[in-house]
Length: 324
Image: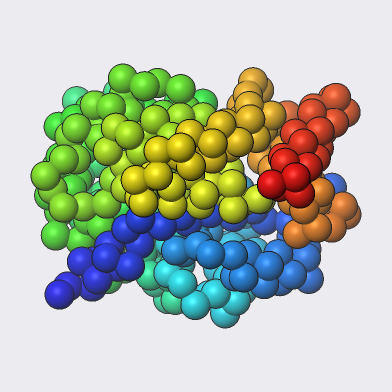
């Protein structure tokens, strides 16, 4: 079996949290807090972790911090590590060619640091180019060839910097020999999600849901694996849904989906970029990240009422756990 097929077999039916990066108010990565968070996450029943993803502000991190983050996670967990590969925010004004080179360089760096696969961020500028589809396919080919790693496509909603991949592009990406699967994160666009799932059918590749607000439905539509930011805290809420679906436990699936949806309602809402801070608050409540390392300097300012809503949701879910 190829390395790509072996990886897909390990990950199918599991949850990969898109993990947070503990930072102080100035944006400095708190390495001690990250170490404790990684140890705690390693104790969860997860299939892998995703680093350098949007939830961990991977494209905002300085190169040295990015390397430290991946190296720490590689040491902390014995499950596959999937690293995001895209254009660092410092290079946002680069030409399309330079942007593509930067994304490939990040994939190569991830391989050197011990990642098991890379998830290629979409280059939104491809959407407007006449040869955008060809360039997107070639970007994934280069990431795989130059890193030597399996690759995941990444259909990401526009609010996070992506664009809707047409079904043709989904199929072409999954036809690549190194394609392990595609992550679908459309936020609330059910039709786009369903179209992408249908395009992936029959390829044998992983259909990875990144649908924090449509998690249960995305499984019913055909997703078989999960890579989600909502699992960055209270990961058990997410794994319970996937486990129940995989086991064919309809009653358990409805119950677990309802619980996860309540958490998603408290954390993934407008302004959507605030979800990283809300998940950090959830991790503080959980005891996974200390207060002084729970800042997202790259998101919008949020009122105290939003933190109270997150905490109230978690307290109610915990009370149900105790009562059950």
